[in-house]
Length: 450
Image (cartoon, rainbow, N blue to C red; front, side, top):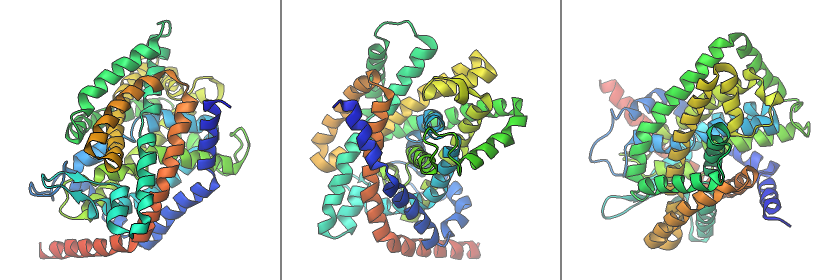
């Protein structure tokens, strides 16, 4: 019985229908329980990103904007470029519809999880913070629930390893520009590990500073290139959207022909794309400088709009109008590169290579923070430092193993992380709404006075 087989079985069991129901069902509950009230304040959430309502004295490690871009660097990128390609390959175009649904309910889920992360974070004497689902469970739930905090942290140090990112960065580099180089995977993995070490050893502030430049710039370049591709094939735009919707309820393009198969692939890839309900995003959002927890909850809920509803849709339409999803043997990120190449030629391939390189590296940076935060909860500061070095070593290992194995390990761990995150968030949802009502009322009173 091979390790590849065990990894596949683990991911399959973890992402069974039970988790799909739990993840999406929780998001629907949060939508209904909130009465959609946070959605009314989306313009205010975007205003918070500009720093308009921030003060230098706010407690936390990074600004609202840097917290969001650091979180987005963990979601925008390979989840939206390679993950979408994987979703279409495994579940057909209909899988994208279920990614959309995951994002819509994920907006509400992120509001709740990230508000809680600020409410129940630990603030150290030097002003730095420790945040995430494990601290929410430790500080807000009864002591007998504490094992759930350790459960999250254990799977967090596995799920936040750079498996998918390292593997796909090396794959696209080799496929596009270095196909004949011997031992390229090993050489590229070592180089990537060195670049990562330079940044991640500097901690969250350095990671957030790098992400605040890379993510907006690369997002604009990538989205602009996709818009050009769509404009050149505008007649295929609406038929592509129609195909996504119709295939979501037929399963005709998925190998098994099963609607449930399409749904599971879509939700699984959607969770990897926006991480709503998984708990990773609250690790960094909980460290933001926020005078009120609801502020960061509002900022966090803009994430699925950017990474799934906009970026994933752009990639999906690109792949569908190019036709490569029907006649190519390429996997993951290379399929997206082929789609660009079919429409824009070599320039398109270079654009996706540049974006994947920057997005993938910034994602690795953020994941190192996620994993080290989990290690710190389990083993203390020393353990966190040791984990960082193990993380850097794993970049090299994941660069040389198969995509399927890397994906299954990370997917399975993500599924396990969702359990304590959602249990604690459902338990504490009334606390979030009480805090939200207080904040929204004060906001309305201030508006009346002005």
